[in-house]
Image 1 (cartoon, rainbow, N blue to C red):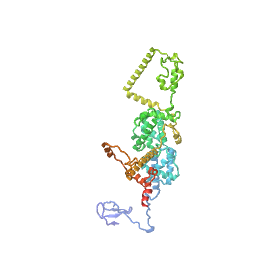
Image 2: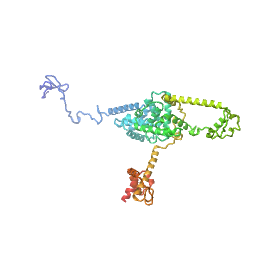
Image 3: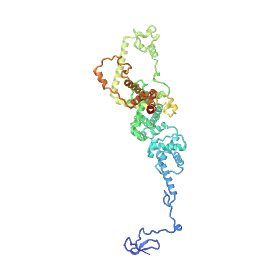
Image 4: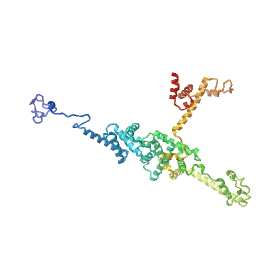
Amino acid sequence: MASSGACNSCRKRTLVVDDVTGNIVCSSCGVVQEFDNFQAHIGGITGDAGTYVRVGTAGTGSTNNYKENKIYEAQKLIEDFVFKLGLSVSKSQEVKFLIEKITNSEYGLGNWFPVLVGACAYVVMRKDQKMLPIVEVADLVGCDVHELGRMISRVVAFIDLKLPEFDIVNSFERAIKSCSSFGMVSEDVFSKMLQQGVFLVQCLIKWFVTTGRTPMPVVAAVLVFVGELNQMHIKMEDVANELHVAVTTCRRRYKELLEKLVKVAKALPWGKDVTTKNILKNAPFVIQYMEMKSTKKRKSFEQVEFDMEGLVGDCLSKEIGYGFDSYSVEDSSSSQYFGVDHPANTRSDYPDKFEISPESLTMIYSNYMEEISLVKANAEIGIKNKKKRRRSLDLQTCTEWWKGKSDLSKKLLLKQILEKDVGLDAMPPSFDKGCLAKANRQEKIKAAKLRIQRIMHPGIGESGYSKDLCLFEAESFEKKKRKKKMKVDIDWEDLIIETLLLHNVKEEEIEKGHYNVLLALHVFDHGGA
């Protein structure tokens, strides 16, 4: 059967239908015509049936291919994440079982699924006291820390699980083993640094520095401090990047660590000269003192005393061949200084032991001067080689001062940590800030009461007496000029305190600082009434 159309190749109207294939071909040139073989299937309900395609399916129309592909891609994603997180085979299986339980074996391929994988990995590790930093998981998953935290809360609520407390000591051990900055250290130095870090971390727990804070910046601060203590040049930025924490927060925790050590150093004989700038040089002595305190062998340096009276008495009573020619013990300067009053040391009891010739005195004095000159010469040599001496002293300090005998060098329970004495009993920083804020509010209340008194009673000064009864001295022009230059800075808090005082609010309530509640109770309601 010929067609009325023209050939696409030779443009002749010699198109026929092929009996075998059903395609239209040109009888002149033999070219098969494209896209011209559509045949309508008309036959009602008895005709050829089409294919029902469901939403989300492909291929032949079966849903099995899509489900199998989804499960395959989800399991592949789980394998990739657990491998990057460094989980063991058993922990990886636990993560898979937990995800399968939560999704009812349906898995998923949306943007939420990687967040769920990270949350399940964190819960599995946290459940067995094996720390996995949430910031590291969030960075790997590619989401915000708060978003991952919300997913963790949902997972914990779904499986009805109560997670144990965060173990910052395990986090420190994991961080120091994973940081590349500590990879080139020998095993002996690494073990010492690990003990020192655990010791400082648990001291910070005792000082409540970790209370209510993000723990990983504290870990970063201790890592940097321990590295500097062992003559390692470590940058805070590098450690913060490896632990996925903010550098500014790490620097703040590092400063708090230095401030606490400075407070501990006040118990040392030279503690008044120790500051945050030179605490690193004094840190070996400070930590050694803290270690000594924690072992409870000595309570403080005040107990390291010598029996000076007995020592001087023994020296004066021994047969050493020296003595006093014409002075008694009571007249000697050394006996008066140490307060020695031994009746056995008098000339009448030992007449032969206090005789000494002028030649012997000359010899003793010459020997003493030679020793003094030798000490001065050594001091001058030490000043010339100051840098070399400092290096050798630092090396000796870092290799010999640490003993590691304290229990704080090992992981302890919170109750055991709080019972230890490390030379400082500090309160939480939030409590100290609250006390300081309360003291500032008390000062503001006093100043506001004085301002109100001056305004409501102009004739009464700050002292409470009338100007007519007070006798003022004639002030010079410079004093008056200085008073004019003085200005009182009043901020919004001062105005609120004045308003509350005018509405007869108790000072105890104002000191708490809940201004919005007090204004709503005493000012706005009172005005409306």
